[in-house]
Image (cartoon, rainbow over all chains, first blue to last red; front, side, top):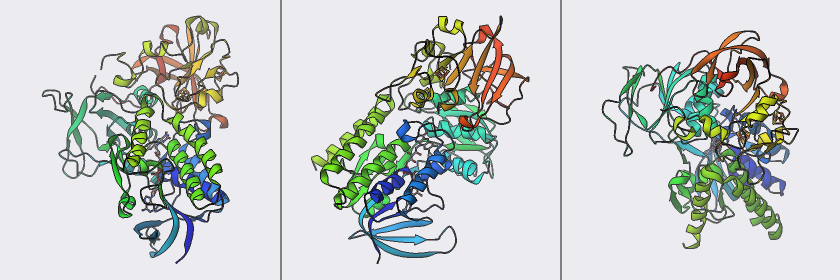
Length: 368
Length: 176
Ligand SMILES: Cc1cc2nc3c(=O)[nH]c(=O)nc-3n(C[C@H](O)[C@H](O)[C@H](O)COP(=O)(O)OP(=O)(O)OC[C@H]3O[C@@H](n4cnc5c(N)ncnc54)[C@H](O)[C@@H]3O)c2cc1C
Ligand code: SF4
Ligand code: SF4
């Protein structure tokens, strides 16, 4: 069985950054991703990104993915696309299936001295009468349809959820030629960034806070929806129902860390609502409770591409240091630089809760 | 949703919110000619506007969550920052365009783009129609990285309320 110094699972911003840093420090790195294209979420992010210059803010996500991939190849990373890791066994043996998308299936196992889990997050669903009708879909799925596959899922859309995903996908649906008839949010306030909500407000999308969808209509596909105002305990307020003429309902009610491999590996899990649910415990070097297994990006707590890249860097440095590829002093200095940037990204009303949640997570290890 | 409820409840910032933020130029500065109008009122981790300005007129500094602050004296109204803001939150306002009209520039990432000279519907922060406007310019140079910037002429009285033009069709009257 072939052995790599570091195997990184997931080629989103976290996994790409981790691979680059580990390879640059002399590790033999294998990066695998189940998709045909590298970049994770970035391959459908056609908008210009937030963050600072170090995080290529102002650059479109698709272009960030392309640049990171080139850097990874230049650093000597071996990349296997269309490869899913489905098992993780004692001694860090990873079972994989390859070629499923290209219809040339094969499989096997590799051994990893160090593993970085950078598997991202998956979308939460909500259910309501009619939610199984064709035309009800995750916002991420709609985004993949318009920006990767170039198929418009519908002409008149109801968006559920006002986090950045709901706001940005609404914007991109309009860019693709659809109308977003309304965006409903159960909470009394908009969840995502005001600049994103302002952008779609300006385009005429009513953002209805304290509203939810009560049902979808249609026999074989969505033909309409009913929305209703809700009180602070999420109870529908009678008499406030409105029927909307729509053909698509997109659900953007949050993401949860995709951490199944961590569970398989026996990593201790910690529940953190702010970070999206169950996450593998990890210390400041991003090592989980299983020695040699690191976690980075949304898989260790749902945040943003900028933080995912920084965590990826941190995991790459930590993995290399634990293999003795860099001295402890060097590793500490490099980690401190990344930590300072992470700290500044986790400030302000949106970042502070994530900062506190990460701190609580690290502490959960100290007393365990 | 009552007008002016604020960005966190209505989805768009109220005039009070933008006027009270450090990115909004003073009335005196507006009266002098073209100037950037930054409508970014929440502390988010973002700063491309700072690097975009060749005059050093925009400051975010450390931490990166600081609100962008505009130095109206340093801003020469070149408009370079507009297409660099990922939030599409920067506008350019020229109150000296003519005796009765102001010129407003804004990023507009929808197709089809209007033709210069066309008459279009100008909308406010909530996407509601405000007045007719004449398209003066549609700029989309390579440095904008596919973010076209449109300049329209509008009556001066609407200079602080108009923030874009209607896209081909809007969301309608749901909830209003
Ligand atoms: C609509 C939307 C807009 C966004 N806008 C911004 C923004 O403006 N700025 C910003 O900073 N962030 C933004 N984000 C967030 C950002 O995209 C994510 O936080 C970031 O991509 C997380 O990176 P990651 O590397 O952890 O995971 P991902 O990008 O999700 O990548 C994970 C990868 O792992 C692969 N994978 C998972 N399991 C396996 C397995 N078992 N085997 C092999 N491969 C596997 C997946 O196929 C995927 O490619 C946005 C997100 C969305 C959904
Ligand atoms: S308009 Fe020009 S000078 Fe003024 S802030 Fe923007 S980039 Fe700077
Ligand atoms: S670039 Fe735009 S969104 Fe980012 S801080 Fe500056 S004004 Fe705000």
